[in-house]
Image (cartoon, helix red, strand yellow):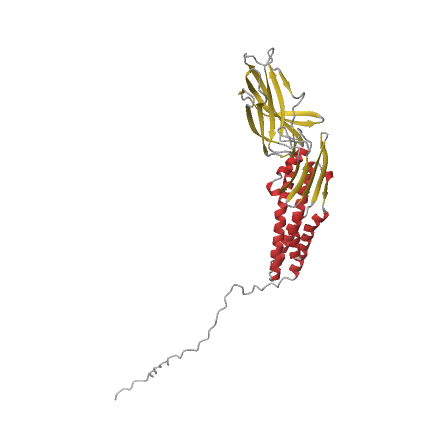
Length: 380
């Protein structure tokens, strides 16, 4: 029983526990995401064809992806792909064109926001971001563009209204003079609470000084009417973070359960009394690995927002579950057939050897006769 249970635990890594099949749209562009979740990895395919200019601010990512990601190394590219499908992005930019009158001397400035991790941010964990200010095109008759102020805004929709707060700001005073000149401002941002969905954007205030020494005096043309394009993000609560940790730990727990089943089976064959205890530990770990994984995967699917597109694989779940049941059956048999307990009486005491030796002959005792005391005779 135990050996069969161990075999089922090891073989469970080859069969997916569930699958995610998403068909949605980015704007009017259809995109698909298909993923199979195993106890140790996720295997996925994504079709982002036709998303020119939507996915990336820097390059066209209109392509198909097919990859695998082992949980112990992090969700990485799979996480980013889910972010792309949900409309998130690592890069977002907007432009500001500053100019002077009446000479119409001008410069086009790009403000780029970058987030190192999308689309999920664990609550309380610092994340790397960067704001870049760059002159995109050859300027016309300018001395320089002065970066007067840069800042990051965190936006959240509350009761249908966009509310925001400034989470970082600086007044660098850096100057850009020609096309391609840029300045970067890296920071770390922490989601202090569970916001749910929120957005972050970097902004800048610049001033143009032309060759005549004139300032643009606030004259500018922006590429947006209200708010610039923002990076959409979702917080991961502490409870969900723990569940994702359990999902990652399910694989080593599954392997450990299988190994302990083999050890307990060998112990049972050799007639060891501890075999049933080892079997019990392996069976408990086996059932915990299934529960850990199911809880973690459900937390992951909740984060994607595509619960309706996810389904469990009955075969994938039944194999480790049956392996755990066989482990408990093995515990029962190992317990009732365990060898009798040895008596502890006299345990640890050394038996003495009693050697009987013949008595040695003793020397004869010389007895001196006592003189009798008589009456002395008187002489006549």
